[in-house]
Amino acid sequence: MDLREQARKLRQELVQFRRDLHRHPELGMQEVRTSRKVREALQGLGLEIRHPVANTGVVALLRGRSPSPVVALRADMDALPIQDRKEVPYASQVPGVMHACGHDGHTTILVGVARILAGMRDRLPGSVKFIFQPAEEGPGGALPMIEEGALRDPDVDWIVGLHLSPELPVGKVAVRYGVAGAAADAFRLVVTGAGGHGAAPHRAVDAIAVSAQCIAALQTLVSREVNPTDPVVITVGTIHGGYRHNVIADRVVMEGTIRTLDRSVRDGIPERMRRLLGGVAEAMRARIELEVERGYPPLVNDERVAAAVRRSAEKILGPDKVEVLDRPTMGAEDFAYFLERVPGCFFRLGGGNEEKGIIHPGHHPEYDFDEEALVVGVAVMSQVVLDLLGEGV
Image (tube, rainbow, N blue to C red; front, side, top):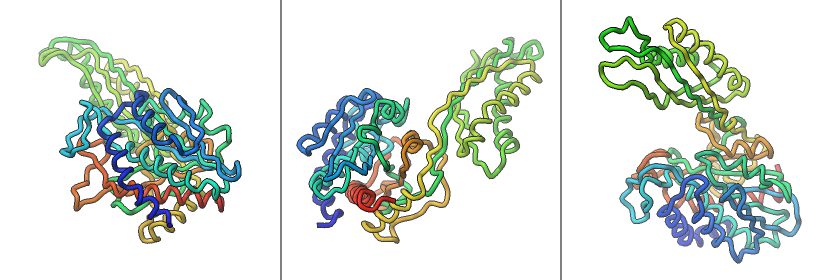
């Protein structure tokens, strides 16, 4: 029986498991029920299970007929603080929390792969690690799992992960060679002026007016301070300041994100921001305080592993269903930490279906994915493991 047929035989169980997770979403580092459901689903498969790893994480080891090589597969388990607006029987039952980015699907797919590969352990020329990770959406569970030994004992040779993509039709896979995702850093900017009466601006230093110039200057940094062939995104996501309509604000606090692909560009952005924003504030008689917190690094796929994933996906789906992406995304993923330590690939799995109205992007309150993607994901991931263990890269 081929892998897609084996995955299809699991379809009903996969859908039930995914819908159960979808009804009961949990935020990062709070995935207690989700983690328990994962461990229950893995029971009886002959896996060596470690829990807890990084608070709620699970690592399960499947030993084949030889101890090495070792392929690791990773799925994230956490949900987002978004109210589910879908009118479906499996909508979230937790107010203000939902799986709006497909992590319930990722977790379900990994459980399905474990089911299939456990049934052929005697034919596996190596071992498989299944990494169920908390808190991808924040504060980030990949690094704590690495620090607690998720990639050791036995040491991992290659690692592979996937992400459901609503922009990609169900039944398709997309692979990117090299840099595939951005670094994501956060900043907090405090602008301090001098308050006053709204009718006498000349006797005050308007922190809101200064902030407006700072926001404009940040876009000038992107367009005039950085090589245009090096993508940079600086977004101000929140701005808080002021008291009432006739009071000049003395203080404004802004928060935002910085996205970069190149490590050297990333390293230089904070100092450029301080210089530029400091100049704006000085010219307008205000002061600034800037804090930049480094977040996830750029996500860089190993080209040889990416090529292997592409070949495996083509075996399952056919070459016409596998796309090679010609550009990265400015989105960020903490799977990047795994890729800094082990050669691997993070690929896109189609989940969209316009005919069913499944069109909403990730982080949308009506996000969903076509559950046929569970079957496709299980089959492709299983093939990837068999090919890497049998042929390497």
